[in-house]
Image 1 (tube, rainbow, N blue to C red):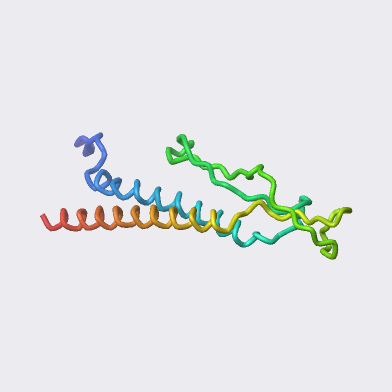
Image 2: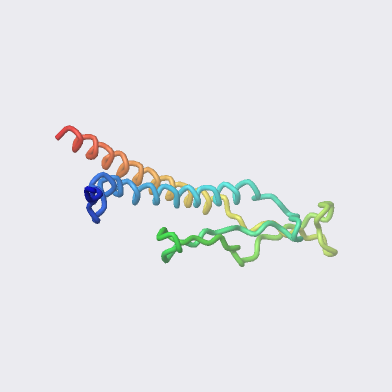
Length: 141
């Protein structure tokens, strides 16, 4: 009986070439997470009452380190800084002194963070497109 065909142990060249798309794709995924949290913050800029009680707390995505799958580990945490207070005794969420606690979300900060995340997302998309074009050209060789 003939010996079975032995395949090389090293990864296939195609997989190695396609791995160049993984880094910008991971970057776009990370920036999408940032954009999702920023949009959540902007949607709750006037939320004075949450199910947990009190005003909405701004959320921040902290990225760093390597996760169990080899990607960048992210964690969503609450910003501990207090929000602004406004004297409005007629507001349903006013305290005994007539002050209403608002979320610690600053629209200007969120818009700047959104512009930065968008630019980084676009840079990753450009790298992805360039890598894809190089892979297409390599198929022509």
